[in-house]
Length: 444
Image (cartoon, rainbow, N blue to C red; front, side, top):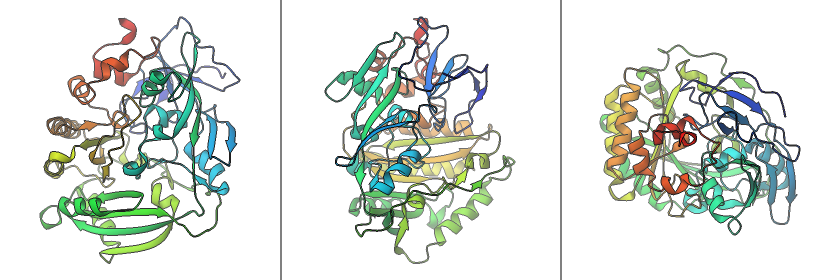
């Protein structure tokens, strides 16, 4: 294993909060001799693509898994891939797509590790038919700080399997995992985009959609007759054989932090107007490559720098279908009243596929996700208000995207947290867990 470096600055993707920790880079050679008893608290991290503090630990030791990047086995007859936990989804795609396979579930970035995908039980545009990443896991190895190695699957150590999927890295260190990929015959996606105005039109499009992948971009700035306008996007993997090759490397990099004044209501309003009107007809169909369909922001490295050195806050929630319409309207109106703006706003239906993870985020309803630049005088108050609306509507917020939930809110969103706590490794901890429980597990 590589040597630890003392107190580096390790950021989550939102760049807030800023915490310091030791960093130990892991390179798997067959075993993980974790400190026992630990000299400090531990937390596994991958690429740091979580937005808040779920991948942070003040004055602890972060076990970074990016060196665990080996593909271990692949069965082309079944699509089952075994890989180490530090392998990214991008690396899986580079291997799998030329062989006619694709990820069963993918979020809006491919630069997350498999371990992170499991720990946050990621979801994608096909949740309503495919569920979460956890549904496609066959098994994984979990190493505890006492040296115990647990092979976890739906039939072996099933409770550990459930607790670790969506368990935010707190149950132990995932070393490798097996996931079942899905076959494809082309890189292309058969795409359809429908413009809408208002929540009711979005709901109608969502309820009538037949495609595997659905999501909508929504304008969170415009008011009046343009309130809640957007583009509903759906797609299917093309059935006609086409080229299967790995993607090229992104060549654009956001070079510096924008000044705080750059992202304001006027510049974002102009962006939203241009984005909405770039599709001229009300409905558009096309064949598109999977990269811009699934990963539109991955073409620009370090795009989070556009939010400035203060960073960004992401808000992601789900509201139940009953009352969800009214709740979303209230949330969108609260955003427009705040004077803040977001141009990375998506809304979609979650399906009713029960999650296999004990602490998984999705549940049936309407999901909203959006980013805000941090303006201390207004951003925190707005996020607190949106969380409270979510609570009042019987919804839930996503731990991987959160930096503001109170302990009371979290424990209401996830009443099973007490049961989950039984599976936390006694040496593991996170800034997020301290915040939403109000205590440190090691202090008990």
